[in-house]
Length: 129
Image (cartoon, rainbow, N blue to C red; front, side, top):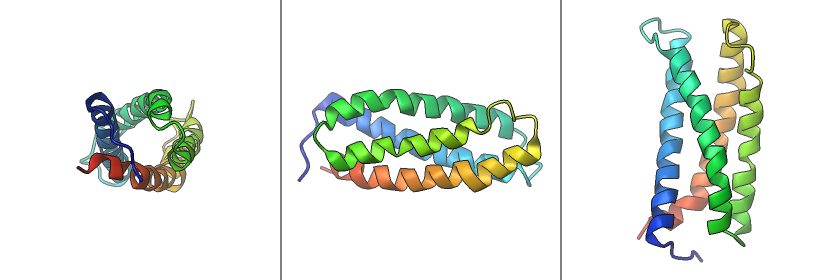
């Protein structure tokens, strides 16, 4: 059973899920930029991904309050730690393209995509009317 969100809560959850889609697109662009030389903004987009990951982390406090007592959502939110752990592997390594490509393709993207599926599975019922 889902509880009804008020308008502000609905807007927050809706924007949150939208940001996840944007991050997914950005990670796909970054991955493509390693082999497609026409995608020249890979580093900038990756930087934007890091900023968005920070915003996602910050919004978890509010989401924890909104979904207090909803254990499945709390667990899914906590799962984001695996994504931030992978992102931190790139700290100080952005000039090493081989390492960066390996971490993004083998660690960061798979961790994000798996986590995104789990959190969306929990949040989508709240966004349908």
